[in-house]
Picture (tube, rainbow, N blue to C red):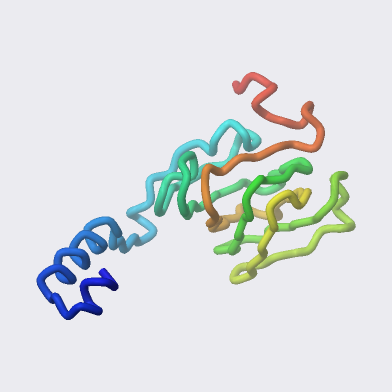
Length: 157
């Protein structure tokens, strides 16, 4: 597109702009538009997830909402890509390290934001029902510090 614009060819530039626009998806979602389902098996049972944009299982950007019940806990883990977390409602607690230690956690209320760099070991829990928005670059993967904490190693009921 840049080359066409530099040469002053509006016909070619217009075609390229149309292709770029078609590839991008404009989307506006209200709360009632979200489709909630069980969170993926890499997360403990009890949470619900709605995909807002992209596909967390594929390469590329994604945005999801995660709804977790009161007392929901995620054992120490890491991700091979950065994880960006915004608290929508409730209280989310986030700590870093390879041991679950509530005294080392940070309380995040609605409107709070955190970035977990790729490879950073962290753990989390909720106080009250909590909704978080997570965005990053897929494929989203979760690697538990201790394999016995990985819910994929335990059959779901």
